[in-house]
View 1 (tube, one colour):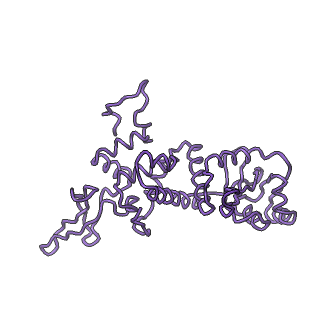
View 2 (cartoon, helix red, strand yellow; view 1 turned 30 degrees about the vertical axis):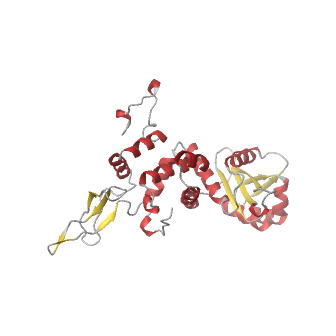
View 3 (cartoon, one colour; view 1 turned 135 degrees about the vertical axis):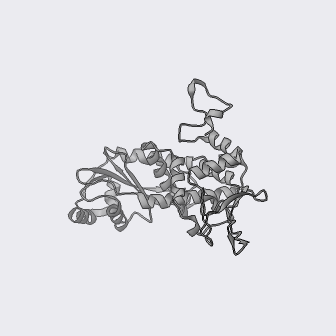
Length: 320
C-alpha cells in the first residue's frame, strides 16, 4: 500500500514498511499520517465496516465526511421515508475495536501495535506522551483480549507415548510484597515446543493433581523434580496413574526443557508484577511464543482476533 510510493528507501531491497502483509512500526506511523489511506486500510482489513445497513430502513448507509468529528467521517442513512430523510447516524467506529475509547483511531492503532509486539509501557509513554493511566488501561484491555483468546484455543499437552516435564514455581517479590507472590504450574512437552503455564492458588496436592488432569492428556509420561513429588504425593500419583494412565518419574535432573522455558518466561515478565495480573502476562507470553514458532506475525494475528469480536455486545469503558 505504501511501499511503491515510499520516499525513504532502505538498501539492498529491504522492505521499508515491513514484509508483504506484515506491517512494521514505520508502516503504522506513515499509515496514520493519511486519514483516507488509514480508513481504507481499516476497511480492507475488516477492522471497521466498509458497508453498513440502517437498522430502521434496512438500506445501505452512506459514509459521509464530517469535519466536526475527530474521525472525519460518519455513517448516515439518507433514505427517504414519507418524504422525510431518515437521518440515522452511526459512528465509523461502530461495532469495532475502536469503539473501546475516545482516543483518536490513529492513536488506538499505534497503541495496539506497541502493546501487542511487547514494547515496555515506559518506552511507549516516552515515545507518545500518553498518560500512565491511559497506558495501564490499554495494556490491561489488550491483555484481557489475548487471555480470553488463549483460554478458548489452548489445548492439553502430552498424550500416549509422549513425555511432559512439569515444575511448580513461585513468582513475585518475596522481600517487598508477600501478597504479590503467585504459584505457577509449568509443563513442557518433550520433542515439541508445546507449553503450558497456569497461575494456581497454591501448591497443595489437590491443586497440583487437578491441574495435571486439566492440562495433561491421559497416557502421558510425566517427569518432575523431587520437590514436585513432595507436593503431589504418592496417593495422587497412584490415582492419576490408575484412572488417567499418567505415569510419573521424579529425580534431581532430566527436566532441562521446563527449566529452560521457565528461564525464558521469567526474563520476559516484570519483577513488580502483581498476582492478579500474572495470568495475563502468562497468556501474552504463550501467545507471542506460539505466533513466533508458527511463523505468524503477532500484530496481524491480534487484528484477526479483534476483527472477529462483536464489540456492540461488549460493555465498553469510554474512559480509556
